[in-house]
Length: 244
Image (cartoon, rainbow, N blue to C red; front, top):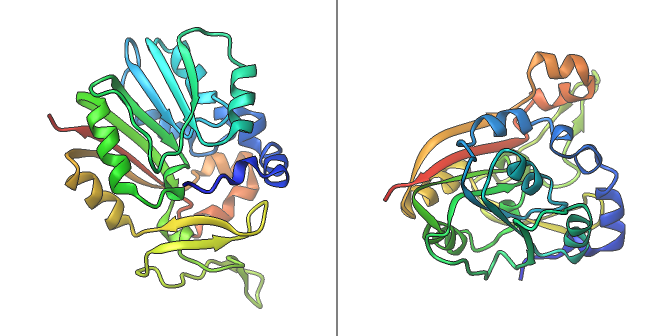
């Protein structure tokens, strides 16, 4: 089963204070780039894998999605999502993304933000998602970049001259990594970028866009703390399409 760290009270309290938790999609610096990779949502059925507080589900309906299913393993996240949603076309359900099922050919878009790096059995998930999409349906997702998931704690190293560097530790050694982020012992699955992309190709997807995201100059001017994110890409953004 996926580690349900989001129902840990200390973790949930810390996560709730993040900018993306308070300000929603606009609080996520990578959101403009991810949004640009989405298809026209009008009339689409959408599944959100790891929906969290339901920000994307509600936004998708505002842009004309016909119905949205938000899935998450965390009861605390779903409780908040349901409390903030008053739309009968949005449904939330608890699901372990390691072992869930979806009705075949039911969605035009599968979306996921920063959830798939928690998933050990990625191949099974991609098979489930592919079968749930209509022919030509879209998969758009973000994960922590493999360069980001590779280092062991503590991550950033401060050099003698004050520069912050990001060491890469065992990049080619794939598997679970334990990190201390908002709580001790958070397990994420490290896999190379090639692993992600080849898995998509292997499971019947055509790649449409791949982006190793970093903030642009305007974002850094507005939020100077983002300058460190230019040292290495924090996120990998991918858009793919079911081939048949």
